[in-house]
Length: 457
Image 1 (cartoon, rainbow, N blue to C red):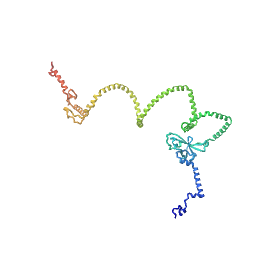
Image 2: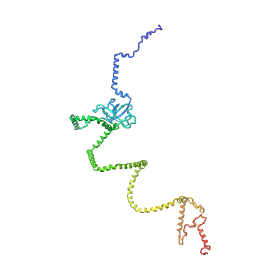
Image 3: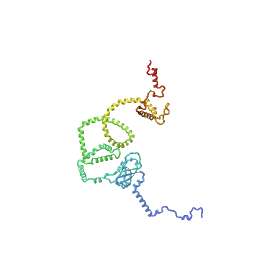
Image 4: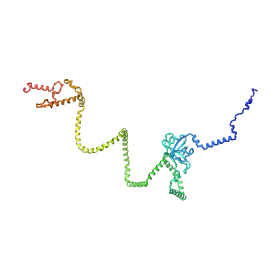
C-alpha cells in the first residue's frame, strides 16, 4: 500500500454517508408536514385573541356582575373612558346566579381605577348586538393596585329596547306608533323648515350647551349616574302613595299664597336676618367652646354615666315612696323658716366662740388633757403608786364619784353616816408652795392677834 497516497481505503469508500431529512423527499411526508403546519397556523389564527391576551403581561381584575350579559372570553373589550385597556379573559357562572368575570388589563391600569371602582356592560350601538365592558374609576386614588372583587352593587348591565318594549302596555305601544306617524306628518309640513332653522342657529348655542353638559357630568365619571339614580329614587318615593304628590303640590300652593299675603312680614324677617345670624354666630362660637370642654369632661365621666343606669333603676321606687314625705315637708319647711332666720345671728356668735376655742385651747385639749384622761392613772408625789396602771383615768374618776355618791346615801335616825359635802375649796390644790386656805387664815390672825371674838385695837 502506498503510504503517501491520499486516496481513501476501499472500505472507507464503500461506507454509506448519513443523509439529513432524507425522508422529506417522500411526497407523503411533505403532505403530512404541510397539513400539520397549516393546522398549527390555522389554530393560531383562530386563537389569536386568546394567545395574545394570555401571553401579553398585564393586571387581572375580577368583577361580580348580577348576570352574564353576552360577554365573550378573549373577545369582549374592556375600556376606561372610551379607551381600550384590555379584554375579558374568563366568565364563570356562580351557583347564586351571578357571573364572576375576569378581565386582563394593560400593565399599570389596576393602579388607576381607584379603591372603589365600578363596572358596567354597555352596548356598542343603541340597538345592541355588540357589547364592551367599561371600568369606572372611583374612591381614593392612592396608586395602589386594585386586587379585590368589584361587588354587584357597583356594577350594572344594559337595558335594551326589546326589554323596554316587553314591559310597556299595549296602549303605550299604540301611542308610540301614533306619535311616530304624527312626527312624520310634522316633518313633512312646516316642521322641516323649523328644524332647518334650529340647525342654522344651533352652532352658536352648542358651545354654552357643551359647558352646561360638562358641568352636569360632574367631576367624576359616576357623578351623573349617581344624580340620575337619586332622581329615580326621589321619583319612586314621590309616587309611592297615590295622591301624595298632588297633596304636596296643593300644600305648596297654599304655602305660596300665605307667603304672598305675609310678604311684608317676610321682608322684615329677611331684613333682621343678618343681625340674627351675627347673634347666632356668636352664640355658636360660645357653644363650640362649651362643647369642647364637654368633650374633655365626657371621657372621665363616661364610667360614672354607665353606672347611673342601675342607680336610677334602684332610686325610682325609693323616690316614689319619698314623694308623699316631700309633699309633707313643704309645711315643715315653711314653719322652720323663722327658726332658720334666728339661726343666722346665733351662727355668727357661735363662729366667734369657735374662733376663740381654736388654737392653744383645742391644742391643749387634744394634747395633754386628752392624753391624761385616756391613759391609765399612776399617781404622782404623795399619791404615787395608787393606780393599777391599767384602768384609764376617766374610769378611776367615775368610780370615785360613784362611791362617794353611794356613801352619802347611807343614813339612819341620827342623820347621814358621812356628814360632809364633797366639793372643791381653796386648799384642794396640791403641790403649790403656799396653801391658799392657810394663807387666808394667817392673814385673819394678823388682823386680830387676840383670836376670834376677843376684839382688838
